[in-house]
Image 1 (tube, rainbow, N blue to C red):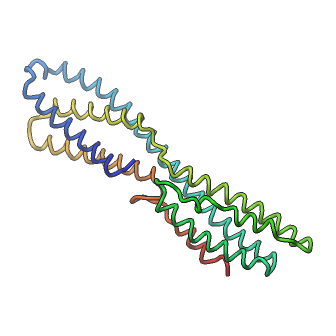
Image 2 (cartoon, rainbow, N blue to C red; image 1 turned 90 degrees about the vertical axis):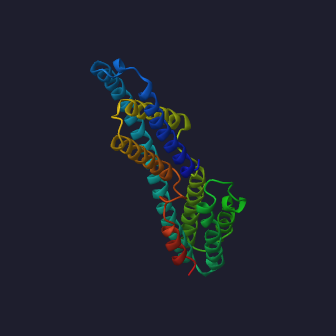
Length: 248
């Protein structure tokens, strides 16, 4: 889901509803603007606005939780990468080729998470078998090396799980039907506002500014739902820092 295009469509719908409401206002008979009618519409729209606010808060919560979860997993992954490199270093000099290969693989694969977050993931990005098999082939000669090998295998498995999880979470967590219902409710709200708003430029400008504000809020929600791309993306700095520390 392209956040910019979706936001533009939402904004267009809200402004169109405002414009259409102004046109309806010109053709409604005077009794439709009585105090009783306005009170009834206010009550009805108050209910719709409350439901829209609840749905909007649900989307914000969902996007924020997804963003925070992925960010924490990136930090965990970076820390495990550094720890695995330290464990291999403690194992002995025979792990030097494995450590350098690990650094090269990490440097080649993880930038693609940000660049291919919503596309097809390249096969080599998903393939972390080389590191695990390399650790399995180590032949420890003492208790310390055996302990380091077991620890390294455990961390390598955890890294593989995190990498798979990150690729799975690159997909959108925003429900399209939920978003569609929310936009429909917002269109109804702005339509009713424009019908009963005073026929002057100040009221019209206020409605347009409100439309832009709502569309801006939707844009931020959609951006947080794309944690690896867009304006509100997760920084790759933890991975970069890890690359600078390992294999040396």
